[in-house]
Amino acid sequence: MDRSDLQSRVAELRWYHSIDLGHGIVTPGVDDTPVRLARLDLPASLAGKSVLDIGAWDGFFSFEAERRGAERVLATDSFCWGGGGWGTKDGFDLARRALDSTVEDHEIDVLDLSPETVGTFDVVLMLGILYHMKHPLLALEKVRSVTEERLIMSTFVDMTWWPKPAAAFYEGSEANRDPTNWWGPNPAAVVGMLRAAGFERVEIVDRPTLLRHRLSAQVRAKTGTGPPVTTKLWQGAIVCHAWV
Ligand SMILES: C[S@@+](CC[C@H](N)C(=O)[O-])C[C@H]1O[C@@H](n2cnc3c(N)ncnc32)[C@H](O)[C@@H]1O
Image (cartoon, rainbow, N blue to C red; front, side, top):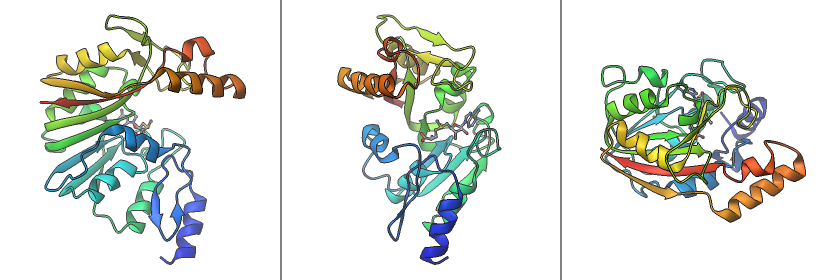
């Protein structure tokens, strides 16, 4: 595929991730993925590691793990790759081709992950997935069963003001107008759930700052999008590392 073919194929698709495909072409994702990458504290070298990326969508983090030297990377997804959302698997397939990547793919639901179905991995990425799970503890147990060393998880949090482990439940589309969002645990609940699922040690490596809350609340107030500012003030995202 030459540069102009690639450029027109990229323009035909709807992208979630912003992926640098080289040749000056960056996929026009709605997500500011490089900013999120900076908050993950992903090891600079993944040399010799096997990596599982759960809910990979367009595959930004799978390709990044490969770029950091991972020996093997498996990207999995089910909802978007299966046509359940506005995205598809076409972006992942195109990016993999453009990057000449050997990342493997497997369409599988989180709840079907097990050593028998996918094997086990040194490093597991579960980014932006937990709050989409109707049964989050069960999902974490499945994820624990395929983790050999470390889980790196980013997730949406709510009720951050509440001092004890707690979670908001969304029956409808009240969280970011997305009916696929079920739970907004607070950071203490996320840590407790990871331990209850069998992880030995959990560390929060990134949490929302008051400034980030304020900025995002101001944007939403101006654009009229999302929940009321007061709700937004105690929502955000955290990144945890959990070791087995
Ligand atoms: C918010 S996106 C996050 C994508 C990517 N991990 C990231 O952090 O940018 C959520 C992803 O989870 C996937 N997903 C949702 N429910 C799933 C399930 N039950 N099993 C597997 N993947 C699921 C969606 O298809 C989508 O790709």
